[in-house]
Image (cartoon, rainbow, N blue to C red; front, top):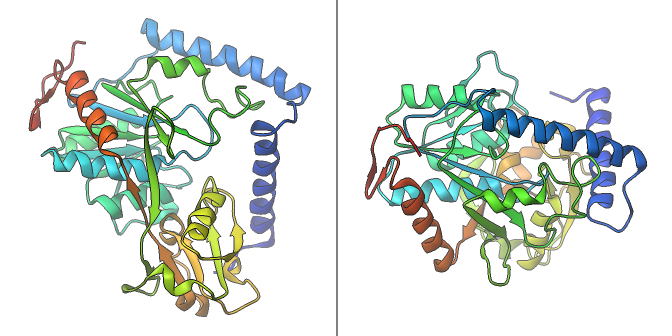
Length: 361
């Protein structure tokens, strides 16, 4: 299965466009005049939309089980997927039965909303939702309308808490807890709204969320840090290698995530110096992406690995998948637990379980 020339060019163009925008968002170059004009239009649209939901003119669905939203106010990666995976495991440790709803970005589905299982196709579910299903084992439902996805999740599974992946701006689904993630290095960039800057909503939106957690250590705040685990072979998942085995030898590193450099940097911190092959976020992988002009091992992310299952070729035997796990300081863990107890106690959360009563808060 080989990508067409048109598809390959589209992917390259998307990656170059992302790089140009990020150079403005996180650099010293001022946004172009058209960007600033578009930003003003976007700001008006955001304000009108928020008022319509607050006034009730636009309806919002209230689930009969509590909803925890994990999101950000910036475009691009802030570690939402690995944090959602961690949060789901944390909720399970507290004796809860979580389920996940997500937009399923990049997936092309015949049915909306769609149940995602570990055996689903990434082309239908989207790469992030499939990775969450594989890593957590909890029910996952994707849909362009998260409210409908939440309805299906609760109707089909005995979940007693919902985690909404990347749903901070999806006001059609009411929520009990909002957790906003921020990259500790990139912060809010130049502070402008899209497309002049990376902000999906004004910075004041952060004043209304229940918790702000940074990806990467931040002084005085709550944070988590990503670490890489032993790699496993794409064609033999039971076969693992320590990253130390790749030190001192030529290797390739491929990443189609929001911040490929983050993956490359984590490898470098482990002593693995790799030839970098960054791709656009949610890039639709094809065998040609693995034609790197050499026979060196190829290290990829788990998010990219779920898109390789439908592909074939001799290159697959050289691919090693490097899982990522989160290290969450005890102070942050305790703050998350306190937030859940405080925010959900009066609605549907009870120590050790969640009731099915509707919230009136």
